[in-house]
Amino acid sequence: MSLALVYSRAQTGMDAPLVTVEVHISNGLPSLSIVGLPETAVRESKDRVRGAILNSQFEFPARRITINLAPADLPKDGGRYDLPIALGILAASGQIPDRTLQEYEFAGELALSGELRGVHGILPMTLHSRAAGRTIVIPETNATEAALVTAAHIHAPRHLLEITAHLAGDHELAYPPVNSVEVTAGRQPDLADVRGQHQARRALEIAASGGHSLLMIGPPGTGKSLLASRLPGILPLLSENEALESAAISSVSGQAIRPENWRQRRFRSPHHTASAVALVGGGSNPRPGEISLAHNGVLFLDELPEFSRKVLEVLREPLETGHIMISRAACQAEYPARFQLIAAMNPCPCGWLGDTSGRCHCTLEQVQRYRGKISGPLLDRIDMHVEVSRLSYGEIQGPQGESSAVVRKRVTRVRDMQLQRNKSLNSQLTNQQIDDVCALTKEDQSLLHQAMEKLQLSARAYHRILKLARTIADMDKSGNIKTSQLTEAINYRKLDRI
View (tube, rainbow, N blue to C red):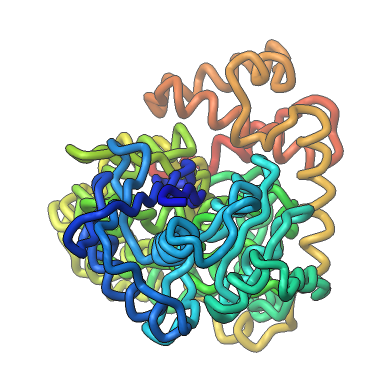
């Protein structure tokens, strides 16, 4: 036949829409044209496909070949269409049978020798292929990633000839083995390494238990970065659905996924010179940024005031919504971005404001200018502000604290309690849920009213205090919020008192 249809998939954000590769061969001068909004890498595929077909001992038709990538209004990029285009040409020219092509979806870049090379975004493609009930054929280098999707039908050959032999019925492609690596918490930095800092350790456990954001303020060398790096170790492992979401983002961004730690929570720590695009994502073909790569994990911003103010302001909406919409003239892409924000900063430019040594000589104006780099609306969205003071020699030489494994058990228990009660963590409670599970006595209502008046708190801060108090109550196995728990939650709004 002179017309063949082969299925593949594009990549648009986290979506993988179906693309039908239509190949038509007709009489006329030898030529090959690709239509359907192909970008440079797709237009160049004709040379890779020609070399792969010839070096695989097939005949490249010396006729007029038209390739349509449908739908025509969807931009196509990357080398993933090499394989379906080559199979479409072989099927349209009668060199391989086409009777079973509709049962498969194909993606992969071709070397001139006919070998298959891996491509990005395989995990979303596998998820959509499974939902469509088709078998996906991908390069062997992508097999480990695709096998994370349970119940998906996958073939992962090395060479074009293996696929043509399978379609012709001469050789059956084997399914790659299912990942059987035991998933554990792995070897992560241990909280036992942190000496002293009991208040900061307590705040870190509260933040982990309820998914709350945390800002640590203290002189240099007090352990702020050390504490932040220990947070993933006290968080429970990701569920399978959460791990698939995070792995799909890594797949789209071209990062390697290892089966043994794919359910560990990500810890992203961009440098303070990062741009807004690096943080939230972007580009002409929008790619995920640091906040999406930290989805279901931790985003740590060290030296918070050193970030550009314009860069920090882009965090405001994702902190509230849990996703980011990147809009460009040609396309839009939406990425999930429900991350736990942990930040650290010095109290003043020299870093020693309030230290008992008296070494700070910063003026009030310098301190205000330094802290003014962080906007009020952003600080309002951070649940907890905690002081991390300088350690004494005795505290540095003191005994180790609890290990991450011990704390993780408590955090897991509290999180399970919240998920059973609210279907979400306390940091994600809706206003109606807050009314239901964060009820206060009249005395505590009066206490919170006085705090709001004195500290000039916003409605957002009011709700965040209640969520935080609910988490502290859950940690204490308390059915109702007590006065001491509410007071502790209010005390974590340090920067509202400055």
